[in-house]
Each structure stands twice: as C-alpha cells, then as structure tokens.
Image (cartoon, rainbow, N blue to C red):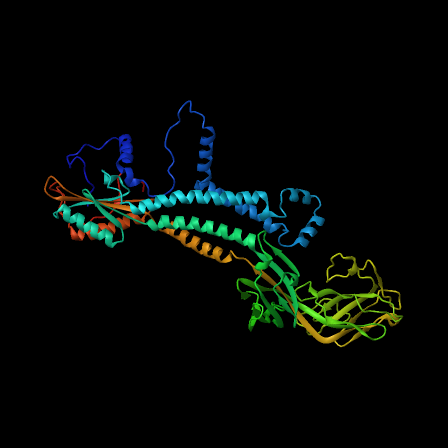
Length: 589
C-alpha cells in the first residue's frame, strides 16, 4: 500500500501549506458538511459601520439565541438549580403545616422567602418562566433540525472530494481490474455493510450512522414529552391522605379525605369512583441483632371495589406495591395503633366507645393522641360537660421504674396507655378547626388527685381508670386495633413521563455511541494501464474506529480487485501488499 504521489500522476505539485488548507476546505465542499443537522451560523468577518439591527433584526437575533442548543442546555441547568429550593424548603403544595412551622421558627428569612416565592417554587413566576423558555427553546431547536435531517435522508450521499488523500482515513492501491468492475464491487460491498451508497462519476459515495442524529432528535423530543407530562401532572393531579382503622373504609369522594390537594385545572368530578375497606394490618419485626425493630412484613389487607357497585376484590397493599384503580394509586405510607376505649359518665352510662388512633413519634411506635368526649356526658349531678384525655401509648412498655414512658419494641408485646384527665369545654363548638390528635386545654379544667395534682394513670388492656369525685371512668379494652394511612393520588402525566424518560435514554445512547461517517471509493484508469483505487473516510468526530472500519472495507475490496506492484526503483521490493487505512498526511492523529 502507498499514498498517491501527485508528481508521479502527472498532476500539479503539492501546494504550499497555506494553499493546502484553503484548498482542503474547497475540496471537501458538501462532502465534509452536513454531517450534523445543527443550524448553520452565518460566516463573515467583522465589517465596519454595520447598520442597526432594528426591531425585526433584534427579534431575529433573540430567536436564534433562544433556539440554540447552548441556551437550551443553560435553561435546563437553571431549571435543575431552581428545583433545589423546592426540595430543601417546605412547600405549600406539599404540607402547609410544615410551612407554618418554618415561618414561626425563621421570622427573619420568611419575608425574603415569600418575596422570592420560595414556599411555592414550582408555581412561582421565575420557575414558570424558565420552564416555558426551555420548552420554546427545545421546540425551536428541534423543528429545523428535523426538516434538515429528513432532507438528508431523502438526498444522496455527497460526491467524492477531488483530493481524497486529505481526509482523516485514507488508503490506495493499483489493480488490473477494470475501473467499472471495481466501482460495482465497491457499491455492492458498501450496501451489504448497510451503507447508503450511490455511484457518482468515477467514485462510489456512501454514508452511514444516521441513527446518531435520529438519537439526538429523539432525546430532545423526549425532553419535550417529559416537560408536557410534568406540566399535565402538575395541573391535573390530585393527592390526598386518609387514616383508616381496621374495619373502617374509604370512598373516593372529596369529603372522605383527611387532607386533599389538587392542580389548578383539576375537576372534582375527575375523581375515580372506587372504595375499599381495611380488613387487617399485618406486621412483623426483627426481634434481635443490630436490626432489631426493623419491619419484615408490612402490609395492609384491603377489600376494594371499582365504581359504585363493582364486585369486591382482595388486595395486599405494601409500601412498593400500591393498589391501582383506573389510573388512581393507593399507597401505604404509615401505620400505628388505635386503642379501643369505653368512657362512662357518673351515672355509669356509656357515652363513648371506639378506637382512638395514636400518632407515632419514634421508630418503636411510641404514640401520642387525644380522647375527646364532646356529647352525651353528664357529671354525677346531671350537669352537661365535656371530657378530654391526653393519651400516651406504648406497644411494649419497659416497666415501672425502668426509664421513661417510651416503647422498647414496635410490636404490642406489653401495651400500656397513659392518660391525664380534663373536663370543661373542648372548644369544638367555636367553629374553628382543631387537630384531632391534640387536646386544647385552654377552656378545660384538670381533674385533681388526692395530692391536688393533675389526675393521671397508666392502664393496661382490660383495666379501668376511675375519675375522681364520681365523675365517671375510662376503660382500655382488650381489643387493640391497628390503623394504616394511605395516600390516594391521580397523576395523568406519569405514564407519558416514563415513556419520555425511556426514549430519552435510548436517544442519548444512540447519539453517544453511533458515529456518523462517510466513505468514498474512487477507481480511475492510470496512464500505465492499471486502475488506481482510492478509499477514504470522514467521520463527524475523530474516532479510532474509522480507520479500522475503512481498513476492513479495503481488505474486502482488495480480495475482489487484487493489487499489483507499483513502479518502484530496482532495489525495492515489488511484492503487492494488502491495503491498510492510515491517517492522511496533515490530518489530526
């Protein structure tokens, strides 16, 4: 194998380096261009006394900047940075109580955060502006690239440059085969290797790797799909929570939720009709070792039905296995205990009986709560009054004198309920909302023990706490129930977001690992009667695989058109050699 010598071919001598550089750009022409569908920038030097752009000119310049890939990447980076405050600062759309607690604890920062809309990041003006600009930028960037890519697919590979030896990968040899035969063999070989090949003049032009640009376009289109999906999910979503005790149920109506939030375009009539009942909660825990107390089984057994009167079905809902009904998902998010208590008045009549959910405060399910008797209670004199009890529950008590009232294990192995008693007005008739798990003692009086202190007592299942002065009693029944909290959500854009993410990954892999490249094979008759075969390759980016691929193609074509010795000095070997692709003279290595 040898490189073509211009002097031996009877052509003009090699140009000077400056002329070679200029000639290289001229020689490659369309062959070296359009390996990418990136928008072409206008070439031109600095010109003095440029005229003013004007309104239309500035608008056109702004549009070109906005739809450039550089600006799209900057906006995507800004969107990522803008989402950070939404993860670190409590959001009104997620938990208004946490936001209120944050404001009370940070009185200096709160006015600043409110002005910057940091408590409502995802609906703020600045976040929406970045989101919309990114959306416009991606569309404006993709549309022209798509049409340009379609045009390239419909066109033919560009004709071979005049000087193939200037390309990054190049090889040549002489053969006795006819030029037409060499070109036909090259055309068949390149098509067999899935190149899009065409015979143009004295050379075969071929191109491959269109999936690279297709992957690039797929990636950016997938980003648009994800943006649309996230926007739809935010505008049309609904999300609410519900705590359900064993034996109780839930119907998917707005009044059944403990808390509920929805997007700005959500319609209450869009709630999927279904209902379910919590049959039982199954939980087991590791009893020894470093993972003591870690849940091993943690599932809620429910009976549900679709629609108003659909057939009943069974389902075990776990943390990573939600109940799905017509696009709505029911996730298990929490668990606790609900002691069953019975309250009697001074005359011995039952005024309250039911399970009272307690809220856990640690990993061993130490829980707090409140028992409120708002109606039906009368003291021993027949006077109407209201009762309230602060409650503290531990499923596994350490025992008297063995430390504080904290549970030692999540399972109910030694349950104890600690109560402190109050009477008076609970404040539930004021019309103001109250936390059902906390007792407002502003208008309540303490029951006093014999020492004049707040009357309180620890009781176990089956035991009774008798109130002073014949005011009644409260019994901790042996029936200890459990509760589970669920999150019911509808987010219509989740499926599209998942499809977009998968497609973006596929497109990114294609754009990173597929190389767009072109190959030319020229076969012409030389003055000595032999055929000079030239092969050259050009890739969109520098890659060590391009010379390897060209060498492989040259080897296969060499078998069809074997080489003959080139005219050399008598002292040199005249044995033909198999061609090997090498970087062209002056090309980057």
